[in-house]
Length: 261
Image 1 (tube, rainbow, N blue to C red):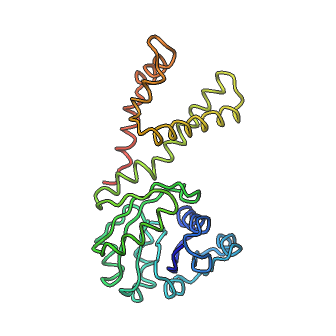
Image 2: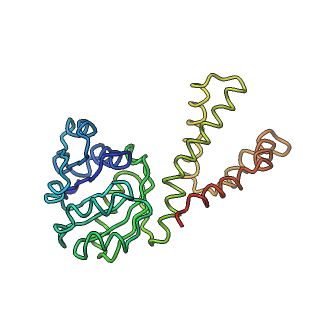
Image 3: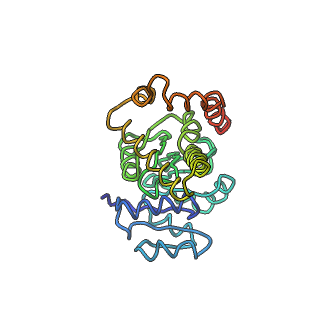
């Protein structure tokens, strides 16, 4: 547990997920977290768990060491305008607004605060995010503090700014692609004879098993595939049918389409 005071500006899908992850992980005491939002209704669940809440962004930033900016990209400039004058060299700003570059952020936030760009995914609420973190001209000690916080809510990869959009495609957009595979496989299970709820449970457990095997044994996916395919067997027939339908190509095309240009 660290003692930094964290303000999350915006309690939408991503801001709310980060707040949930912070409270669930206990990385800071609940009293050290303040969450803001224009709608008070979205703040009630955080207040009930000991976090501070407010509709006043400036008030939240004044007392914070780390400010997580989690608003829509087109709102970043105007929201930063509410408190940029109090972003001193003692404060750290972490923007999770996809597609807003460091030059714009530095222009709008000023030159004094430490600045980071981060791309988590919504699994951060369940402490299983894959987060990409880019420091913008900050010292290593600051980077380690911010990385440690995100590490409590999943895994964090420190990268260059040009890699952020690829990270977003792989992990932030990528979680939606994983959901789509689950849906497709579950629908196939229904066609083949299982009830929808059973089929979804089977597919999800299978994916958990696949990830666990790769993590625990350090295998490349193709090595793991070799372990479950036999000559002339059912698995290789299914894999080849998927490839003939464009499985790998479709995945790569989807990733390329979701990279911010």
